[in-house]
Image 1 (cartoon, one colour):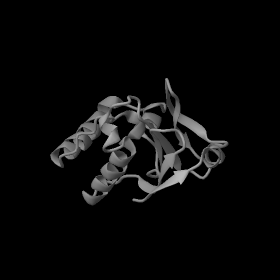
Image 2 (spheres, rainbow, N blue to C red; image 1 turned 30 degrees about the horizontal axis):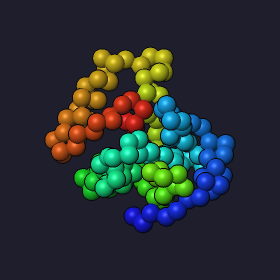
Image 3 (cartoon, rainbow, N blue to C red; image 1 turned 90 degrees about the horizontal axis):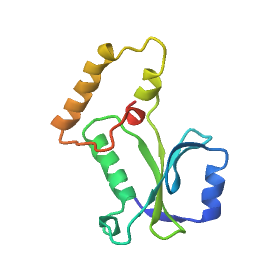
Image 4 (cartoon, one colour; image 1 turned 30 degrees about the vertical axis):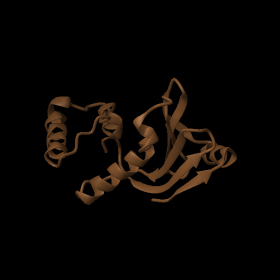
Length: 142
């Protein structure tokens, strides 16, 4: 996917009215936009990093493509951006439809003993396909 420049003013306009889904000590990093798409910001945190050779955003895009190739439902990358701030990139994507496991688990009546076997099977299926998802968490399982 081609990387294009996204000026700060355009990024600000894109995230205006968006809901922050994730943040860290550097600030917001994942936004749910008003149109339902998501923009994820990637920061290179160290001056010398493997991200100089292969940015985290590029890995994110490649991983989504690999999941799709394996027939595993995944997000749809819409755009790849280089931001004005050095070492920063962003990916705009359409998330999978549905609720995350975190949203489902927060509902009344949710039972882990009933749902844990399904989660274990999903993780086994991913591992059998050679996918070791280091950032797997309840908020990114749909």
